[in-house]
Amino acid sequence: MSVTYDASRVTVVDHPLVQHKLSILRDKQTGTKQFRDLVRELARLETYEATRDLPLETVRISTPIGDTDAKRLAGPKLAVIPILRAGLGMVEGALDLVPDARIGHLGMYRDETTHEPHEYYAKLPSDIAERICLVVDPMLATGGSAAAALQYLRAQGARDVRYLSIVAAPEGLACVLAADPAVHIYTCSVDEGLNEDAYIVPGLGDAGDRIFGTL
Ligand code: PRP
Ligand code: URA
Image (cartoon, rainbow, N blue to C red; front, side, top):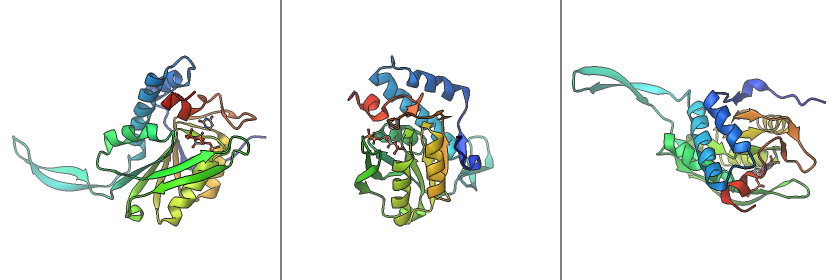
């Protein structure tokens, strides 16, 4: 039976450069250093998409040639929130584009047998309600970790939350979109589904292990 979800709340970043880099990322021959670099690059490109609607204001500036009206970001400010561990690999890529963002951390691991998420750490900027939150985690599989992370963030007052994954399973998208009525999800690919171990197929394996070389 096919999984259904609200596709209007999912942006698949299908730019050719993204798809090319994703293919290298998926390849089991790709080593730790290159994998880590690609996760950072893909996070940067996804952040570009996820910040497309940031409001601008007009300011008067002087160029060396003359005065003109120019655009600059009008706020609100951003927070980048990695879900540990694998989300850490995406933080620098997001910061490449929004260097002044604050960083929050959510520690979450998935039980290998039940696939249920377990929360083990949380530290957020105190003004999280005023910030646009970019939650980053490369893998959206069952969606359990993402749904738990979003539930926690909402309880802390977060309002504008955008979720950046690199690979998503349809089951995970359906779970998260049902659990959180306002989040928008960005991903580089919606894959076929999950295997019996709740790994994404074809996916890219265990993202945390590949980023940190703990295979
Ligand atoms: C992975 C991944 C997500 C989660 C996705 O983390 O980075 O957080 O699994 O699975 P789900 O959608 O079924 O919840 P993992 O628990 O393996 O921890 P790690 O990042 O520390 O390796
Ligand atoms: N976590 C991963 O790292 N990969 C998957 O495919 C699923 C969960």
